[in-house]
Length: 424
Image (cartoon, rainbow, N blue to C red; front, side, top):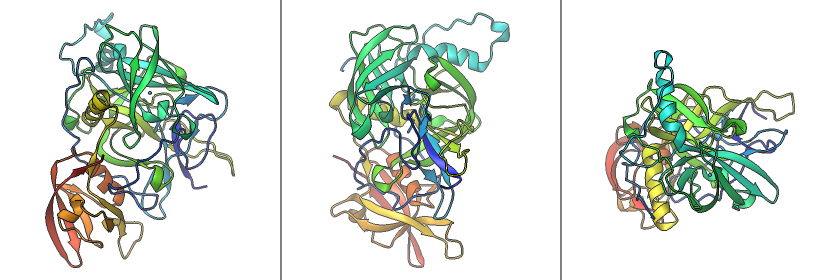
């Protein structure tokens, strides 16, 4: 076993290179990493915020398994061929509504209050604990209230049981009320799921900020139920934006995220909870963390939080959530290629772009004139050095968007405008 392992919060025991609850992955027609490990990526633009309907309208932090055995299972993030594998632990997802009305915030000791104090006071009432029970066990994660009448956003891995099945789901709100819940729909590719609470009303919907405006160094506060401890608050900063993160042990079960990175402590059970800014507005859904192997020789013991956590940007999460609420499923942008990381001739561990391996007939890539062997080195002004970065950059866009690709073909470099397709 390599020194580094990917982990998801919330497994009854550890399995190297395997997510805790492994969602069924969409077969890649979007660019996919051809073989793990892959490099983390650079910045990009999430899809624009789309308001959620007021009425019909839980990583890959899997859920936290209840028990004394190991708390995480394996997942994947990493560098180029031969690079060490970084462990990822699923985090709580951050969701929220788009209500413009801000809830009242009461600070008992204003002379001692910090930015995190005010942010937590505003956002905590909108964060819930998600309990899932299956025939083989139970666990918990976190979630974010989207609407006053009971829509809640969480991670797919929180609610997905073994083989992708869903067990009995219950949700406890911040005031202690316990609700039965049903899964409205899921999107394993983004590790998101929407729940609907039974007979809920007057819940406190989270307020979302524009995650496109998040900057490195901004205050970040994570709220969720790590290790089953509801209403837990941790704080830190935004460490990076547009971080291409692949969770999943193989190409076929990969979830590739265009993530916000934070050093706010995130642990098993945080998955699906909120990452909020200094104003208490949701900027991301916590979904995974990196961990370092800490075991005994031959063992699979993993460390917990090491200050490298990842959240799904709020703009993308809102778009996906709205589609699930309206239709029961979600779409994503489609380029229509399979790609692998092109390596530098002098150092095979250094990626120089995403090399096109195959092109789907009738896809956006074919219509734009891409060819097998082309190497994509940028999407817009965002550098691409690996296949994972290409996947993350494309998935950060909405279907139908037109993007400019920088393509290396032999010794020539050109730019190509591509109007992205959509998954069905």
